[in-house]
Length: 61
Image (cartoon, rainbow, N blue to C red; front, top):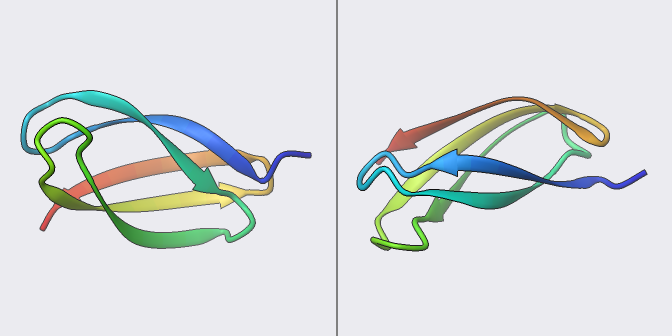
C-alpha cells in the first residue's frame, strides 16, 4: 500500500492548482508549503488514513 498520496490543492493567494504529495501514515497533520507559481507560503491541514486523504484544507499564513 502506498503511504504517499498525491492530492490537488489550490493556492489561497493566486488560485493556481497543483499536486501536493501527502504522507498518509499520520491521521492528522498540519504543515507548511509554498505555491509552485507565486511562491507564497501557506499551511496545509490533512486528515488521512493509510493510503487515503480524507480531507484537506489550505490556509493563508
